[in-house]
Image 1 (tube, rainbow, N blue to C red):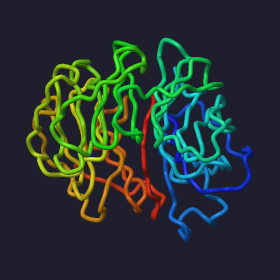
Image 2 (image 1 turned 180 degrees about the vertical axis):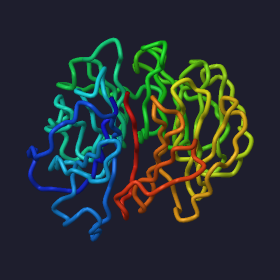
Image 3 (image 1 turned 60 degrees about the vertical axis):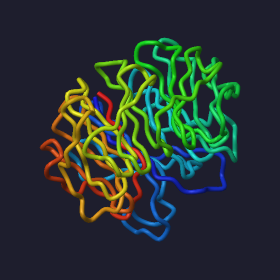
Image 4 (image 1 turned 180 degrees about the horizontal axis):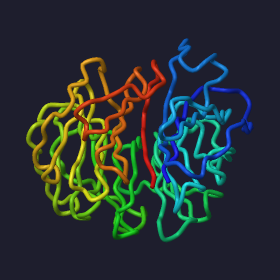
Amino acid sequence: MLLLLLILFQVIESPQYKRVGGSVNQLRPALYAAVYINKGSTSVGSLSSIGLFRRYEGDTAWVNLRPNTITPGMGFTSFGDRHQLYLAGGNGLHRSTDEGRTWRVLTGWRTKEVLSVALDPADSLRLYISTPFGVYRSTDGGSTWIEKMRGFKTWFVRRVILDRVNRNMLYATGEDALYRSMDGAETWKQLSIGVPGIKWVMQHPADSNLLLVGTEDHGVRYSTDRGETWKQAAGLDTSAVYTLASTRDGSALYAAGFQTGVWRSMDKGATWSQVWKAPDFDAIYSVCVNPRNPEHLMAGTNGSGVSESFDNGRLWHDAGLPNAIVRQVVMYP
């Protein structure tokens, strides 16, 4: 199933979560998205209503679930099924075991922002998070955390992902470089991509040797040997690419960023063509593809909410929450 959720962030004094109405629909698919609403926006009600929002696929109304302590941050993922969800937020790592109705902060950090979370598919107790202060690993489900930065040249780590085949191999984006670990984050090696400003890293779903990165000023670069050597993708040579997405089988890849619109590749990232100019948006922070329907795409924008396409990205429609800054959109089967 796919459940549609929008995570809306606001700094709240109370450290406790409050469960709010809204039952979980067991029949329809759903999507998850990390969102920040501009202060002063009235698109979803008063400022006090900012929190966790949910919208089931096919609906038009949003339901507010309000996790009270979520502050500006991004990153959303699940383990195994949609019952156990993890949110990387501005005040730590949050976990829900009831499909987002209630949440618990795992890290206990009031001031440390968590930017992304990666889960070991073979060990539910092993978690990795990226923060402005480095990579951390937990082997007890988030009760305790250990910093894992040996080999990094800077502290800021934007994103960490786990290799699809080798659970001891990870990739992490630093301030200006991509790093790889082959020993479960014990040590890291900087990979020579050739350009600075790495914004996103993605592993191809059907080819574990193929990595793609979105960069600040050099579009997309790709590697066919797990990061040892890199090539410049054609079509996005000078663009700022903030996000990359793929169909479940990897037959189509998507990229978006600052004043780029949405681009698509049908040859595993080697060449790209624009499918949507998106003239009304100065930036698109996130694109995701429905794993059950590869023609269905969602995009998170900078200040214009969520947009939706049902024809491989050619035509797009408003999917709600105007004025919202949508940092990440994710769909789960």
